[in-house]
Image (cartoon, rainbow, N blue to C red; front, top):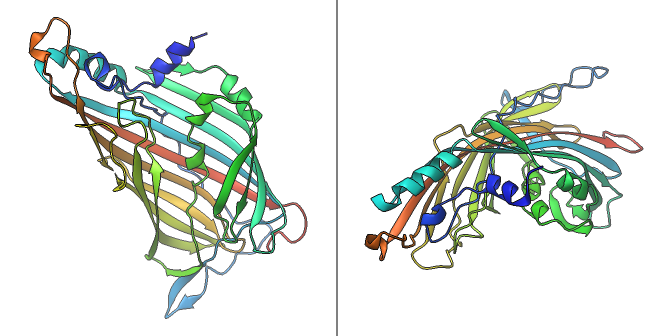
Length: 355
């Protein structure tokens, strides 16, 4: 069994390593790309439904997501993150150390796999729907230089003790969520559970869309990997997903999804001469989401994206290298590939499941 120190080393991005004032950047990374989510077919016993109303000869989707009271949401979800490339810029005295860390980090991957159960109750007077949520199954894996590393099963054991409660607004968006029980484990705090909670878009009000029209889901979110660099411990980014209606058939609406990243204008590094710039990378930023029209729920999504992180921070002096007594700044560039996948079923405990 690997020690706790070994596991931390697997997670570490090692930015600037021993040479950089900020030690290493912890890069959470992902498993091999997952297969595209299969489109959910219409129930076999149900006759083919009309593709949707037409306005001026064009199909129109009435997008009206709903919270489903007295129902069970069963979500299978996965988050993958991979370090596609890592490069450094620094004086020659630092080259050997930086080359080591670049080789150590490049190709490192991480995968989080979840089965999440959310049980809702009757709506309250305001239309909000209370829920209770658990994670009965979870898996976490790392890959470095082609070798897979499975972590201790203690995280999964502790995660099974977690229970969250909260509410959905009438449109099914997450209003609030709080942990009500569960064994404390700091490694769980570093998981991407908050992003899995928002794997489907937030839609505040109903809207009509023709084929080719879109809507935007934009918010500020924590950076999807930790940077253990002084002043950059809590980086936030602007995450934007654009959903473009592609087709309407058999009671399902299918959207193309484009994910992009940018700086959060409100974020500032807490130390001098330190900066972090976030932008979309050069990799795949495409995806797909499927919406069940009659019941008003998204049932599947797969969103691939890439992110470029450019960091500038003070270097530290190196022993035996007097030329580094006033070392100046070093730069690192990280290219990440990310994939979110989710597939869910929603079943009413009793009554008409279509309402």
